Length: 300
Ligand code: NDP
Image (cartoon, rainbow, N blue to C red; front, side):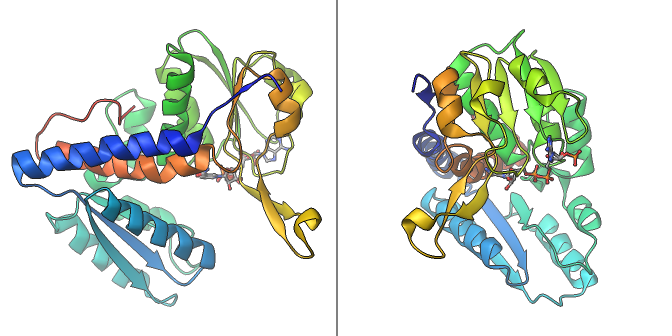
């Protein structure tokens, strides 16, 4: 195995440390405590775990955490009314509505009801447009975490060939925009891409965001490439006992690690960075709301 393993857990801890320092500075210097409101509709078990982790890490960073848990049959109008209240609440600097929402709720409508300045997930259409036109925006957390790791690993990304596999609005497209912003030559691949192996072999930076276990084998990876595996897939793990499962990424880790220059593992790579970047975005939103300079190294 030749590749450097990028330790997302350690990196996320560093980001959370920077966030906590910044929160301390805001409290001491300005009497401001950044606040993050998380809204969960329904009782999806995975979403409940995410929301719990977000609340815990928000509090650990010294910020205020506001949790709003609503029943699964909450009318859309009630959810929109809650968002209105949070938009107007000066103690709330970031608002996150946990996805997926129940079928009777129009997710796009809800996400676009969040004040763009408090849209710490970066999904509001205004932030999407700002990112796409290279203007200051709130950047979606997972791609922001990937960008931070890439900059840390490679320094200047300018001129590198980047291939992003996956074109979702929450990972693939914003990831591609960020890489373009750092002057990479960017290809976005998807399920209709012709000769995906050859496309991937041209990548100095290969970002996999598909959701198919180990679909990218080692021989699709250019020697020395940096591989960021966003995929989180649960697969059977009979070696751990009957009915047990484990998490794997979209990249065949063992195969790719023989060839790549650096690679993120799953778990322990991109995953931990997502919540760290949510906290970073909340601090950024708080600084912007108060006309204060933004913290260094926590934004795109
Ligand atoms: P989506 O399902 O929204 O998008 C998947 C993308 O993969 C689509 O663009 C699709 O193409 C493409 N795709 C599907 N099959 C193939 C194929 N055979 N070859 C090439 N491309 C293909 O997924 P998300 O972007 O939401 O998530 C992707 C993965 O990242 C998931 O495993 C998810 O769990 C994980 N994830 C991890 C996060 C983290 O914190 N680490 C956060 C968010 C997601 P097309 O558009 O043509 O259908």
